[in-house]
Image (cartoon, rainbow, N blue to C red; front, side, top):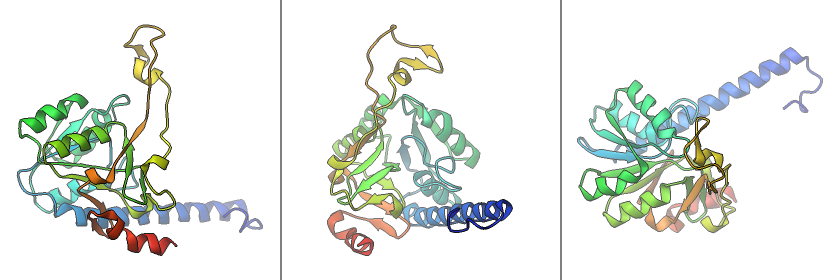
Length: 244
């Protein structure tokens, strides 16, 4: 934008940039609201949902993806509760998702990441719904580390596992999840908590920020154009072709 309007005064450029940012924010909110309306029909009264990481207004522009689906369902009068994974090592679930659900008035309970299997076994989870950072052309989904584990657990316990993400999350140039690079972050995020050591000095740590969930473990992908159902090779075909 700066190059296209190089001859304009700085003040005019600033106004253009602000206007563009506001337009992007509005577009994101509109997209998320459409996504949320498509997804909220999946939630029933009395259900117990389980989510991972943060997918609300703090993670998007104004409304949210997976948490936006919950918000839309709540605003539609449905009543349900949410299990919130703490989401180690940076605790996005504990720090952010609980705060957002609290502001919305949606009942939640914070749980250790490792508690999901037991809750599913006890019949206390009805659905898993979470977001995505990147989705390959075949529906394989990269998201916060721990997502793949939840998908395996949901499959074992015959529970629906939904991913909520706008179509902009799809990268059709990537054929499958094996081609999605996974970021490895500093080990100190695992060995320390807010600067306080929680492991012996020098303890080696592997800190993968994301994992990739195979598409066959996903019940559906909630987008602003509707809920894409497996086989994703068919349901995603029109959008893949539209991208060229």
